Amino acid sequence: MKRPLGPDEQRLWRAVLSTVRPLAGRELPAAPQAMPQIMPKDALKAAHRTIAPPSGLPRPHGAAASAVQGIEPNRARRIVVGREPIGARIDLHGMGQDQARAALLAFLQRAQADGLRAALVITGKGTSGDGVLRRRAPEWLAEHALRGVVAGVAHAHPRHGGAGALYVALKRRPTD
Image 1: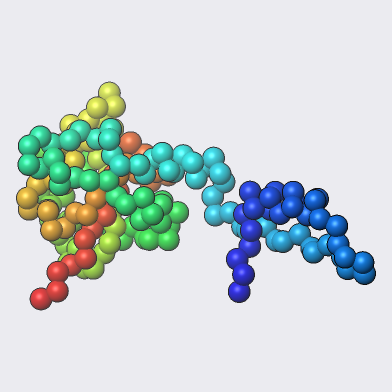
Image 2: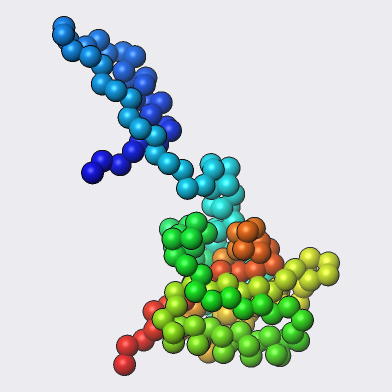
């Protein structure tokens, strides 16, 4: 089965057809069907910006700095458009730092044990856009206890919470 052509490919095809003269007794081929778009181009471009590696996230210092990495672009795109489901969500609103950290660690370890591959961590933005949980969550995700659990972290798409939420890609659970 052939895939439908995208808008750019259709424009190119029309440009080629305008330069071709068919043989005697033949017709020009019909224009191919358009490829259905999952998201409008503007939203898809915004999603690409949103799912870029989390350079805006506060990074922990020292050896833990390499532990928090961005989610692979293709995987992040699958999460944004819903082809890789967000298996679990945790909302840390209203929790103190110690309570939120403990809840986050237990939640992610349980999610991996359940075989989930992606999770959404809602930290909130804080009162002035620079909340404590929002700043500290990337540090907690880089801790040694989660090194075998977290594959990557990225800011969430606006429909999933935007700057007040994080996508967390989970590693496959270890086989015994």
